[in-house]
Length: 235
Image (tube, rainbow, N blue to C red):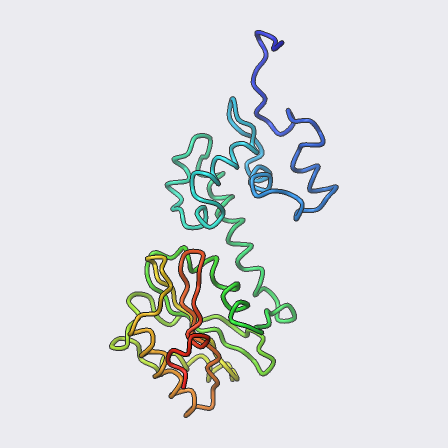
C-alpha cells in the first residue's frame, strides 16, 4: 500500500536501476534504448506523476514520433508540460547533431547505391520543411556524397528553376554525378507535371556538361518517389 506522504516517482533516480536509461545505455549501448528513453536522458527529470521516460513518450505521442519533434517549432515544444526552453533546445540540438553526423568527415561520406540510399540521407530533414526546397547531392566517381547544396527555396516549377544554377556547385566541386531532391510540403510525393518538366531539362543539360543525373527524388511525409524509377523525365 502506498505511503500517504510518499511522492510519485518522477526522477530517473527514482526508477529501479535496471530501468534507468543511462544505466541501460552504459550496459547495453544506445541502440538498445527506445526513443522515449533516449529523450529521457536529455530531459534528466520528469514532472510530478511522470518520470522522464514517460514525458519522452508523451512528447513522441503528441508530435507523431521523432520526425514530428523535428518539425515542431521550438515554441510548441516549450508549450508542453515540463518542457522549458532549455529542455526543448536540448531535444532540437540532439536531432540536429544526428542529422549532421552523416556528413561530418570525408572518410565517412555516405555512398549512394540506390534511390533508397539517397532518400534515407535527406528524408528525415526534408519531410519536416514547410516550404518546397530543392537540393542537389554532389557525388564523386564512386558515388560518395561530396556535398549537399540547397539551390531553391519556394515553388519548384519549370518556369522558375534555372537549370544552370543546379550545376554551378557540381562544376565547382568537380562532381561526376548529381541527384536532385525536392520536397512536397503537402506530404504527397506524387510528381507533378512541373517536376517532370524540370527533370527533363536537367537531364538534357547534364548531357551537355558531362555530369550524370542519377535521379530526381520527391520527398513526402514518410514516402518518397524516384522519377527515374518511374521513367519520368529520363529518356
